[in-house]
View (spheres, helix red, strand yellow):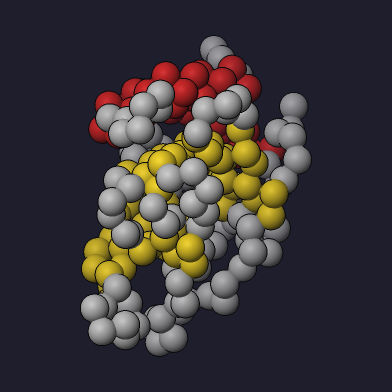
Length: 190
């Protein structure tokens, strides 16, 4: 049985192997990552029990990618936490829960510049992945579906160098929680 450090290294190795070019095959990457996540649920359950989250928002731990133009983040979501509405600029991305379940709400910008419109939801459990290409401007927000436990997810972003998160103002009538600020956390617990 692998521990969480070995399993995270395996996920990082898969991500780096798939993301060598400008346009990785995100479906193949999702399948391979999902297989590892489902095979090692116990390691991620152990990790989730050790990760501390606070009421201020998710804890984000960057994972090393060497010189690859890839951002790989481990995110610990507090119980019932909802992110602010955002997109990822001109980058492609993939997110996959490792422990717990996430709801991803999709939103569409209006051509007249009005408030964004809700446009769908996805529910993801451990090993389920959702991805978007760099040419798609996808507004979304994520929510930990558990009211009691932290959720863990792995997020990969690549594409246009230097493109960061581009946060959009949340719809005033549909905001469930005030926006929070994610915190960069230190090393993973042993």
